[in-house]
Image 1 (cartoon, rainbow, N blue to C red):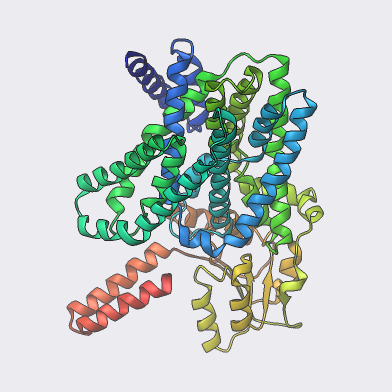
Image 2: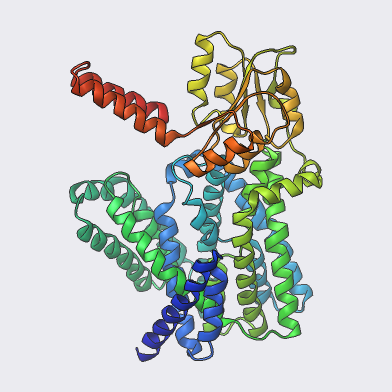
Length: 547
């Protein structure tokens, strides 16, 4: 117990000091967490570090499961499963072959293949959750692909536990794990939302209920001789992120994330060692596979599945980190003495490097996409365009609407009443059938593609209305070299001032519009111009319009 308390004290003490520096300079926090770990690793016993890392990973897996929108995942299930399984299978086989080529035995080659194949949801989730309600297509795809890869991670943990760590094969573990996941789904859909509805407004009780479920599933996994990460994953699925009754629970879960994230990253830093040539060779191969091969394969499969270049590249960039499941597997393998030490050190080193790189790619994904397009990478991968495009030649004074799903329907309705021709630009193939049914002119493609604007006949348009919540797409519209007026959506007043200065004709600020609508409706109600029933109907209409 003393070792654990000492470790926690050093972890949070060092992290706090270094985070002050990061905050003052506006720098990403992950490198500072890792640096704190390097310092702490000189004092903390490795056994305590491994225990902390396992529990940190387990709770981070729990937190990811809580925030997963299973309905959204199910709606994109086919493409997500296809992308996740294809990418993991291709890279896993290549990684296994590379491990054998390095001279590793078959078991260690399997570890090498898993490390190369599985990508993490950890860094990606931290910024996917920050975008608000209007999630762009690539974030929705990324979340469901991460879920698929986490399921593959659970299966890998089960397979290794049953066939490698056990003295005798224990196939029944798969049945037990399946039963736990089935129990989690039953709780999520038939029990938890009813429970949270009864407990709303009582955050303390909600917190205790959520933690009880988490500990209960982990204990159940331990009793069944399963890995704790399997129980944590099932617990995350069971605890529904069910608005509005579970807001208190979600806030508590987010507080747990703030607690366990430093533990994870600091322990990764503490496990780093001075690498030898063998470790550097393994780590370099893993880094190339995760940073280059995985994103390219994901982008290629999505492009072949009908997605545009930008969505495909940005989705791929969210899978450029070694998975937390990989590190968990490596720690379990080290405890079971089935992994060679240079490979374990290489996995830790590759985890640290890819996590640092992921903080950069998550912040600059739009610019990276621009560079890849300019260098012909998107074209080489095969970007679709013509097969989902229909535009009448010779259009004039038409309205170009960017992004159908985030308010484009309302703009189209208004233009239809004014008998104004419309051209819709969209990058989500899921909406293609609906767009084709409602619009005469549409283009499926990336706003960064000059050919898209040629097909939209930009120079003859009356106005461009961009409703996308993604800043880099809005910037592309603002920076178009044209005299055509451009109106873009913004998420804050600073962005509004910047875009207007850069040449935007106008901005759409949803929060301000919503507040103005509420104010007008409230004034009408208080002046007895409308009844309470009509006030309620207007509120419902505004909600449906913004959905």
